[in-house]
Length: 248
Image 1 (cartoon, rainbow, N blue to C red):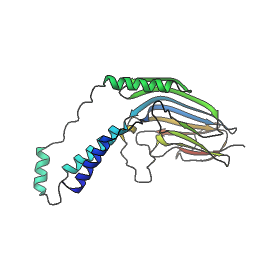
Image 2: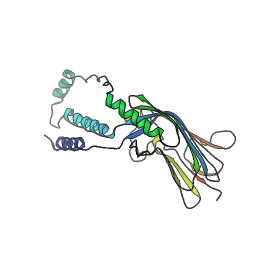
Image 3: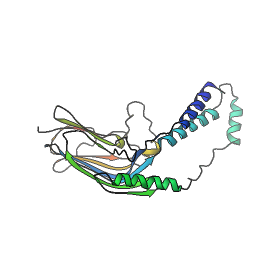
Image 4: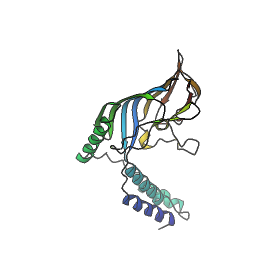
């Protein structure tokens, strides 16, 4: 066994021995809005689908795919004719049909929906099956401190999609991490990850505060008031980001 294959096998064994208690929630089809007032008042909404991703299963699948690709790749001393012959004799496998959802998975999905529904802001939260939820969320308040969505300890969701950082210089930075590729600029892949494949929607920021910066290439939307609309797709790279300055 080569050193690379041994390392991958060891990593797979280590990953299998770990129990990752947290889950990753990812956007599906959605409409999301954020209004920030110059008086620090805000309203955030998210209406649409939520996809549940199991990080342990995703890690295990990635390691298995890495091992398979390493095993299938020819050695440096392989005869090109033998490699071609093997490729003809062993065609690519047909993808297996997805396994039926188990009763335990359904129960876990419903439990997560119930945990979300208990949180202030959720007007509804429903499990649709196949690791997919439909939620209706709206939260209003005052930005005298930071705001993040979603974070729910009962649902074991700890990675926010949208964060508003309130700073001491009367500004606030908005960053919608889940609506873009946070690794862009650091060699991020052009191929969407599994949790991004169903992502499709819009994120709209409106404000009557001073808009210090925003990174939408299309600029501000036409019409009265200050409005920026980011269109989010599975291959979106830009992480919607803006900075506003309050009146006081």
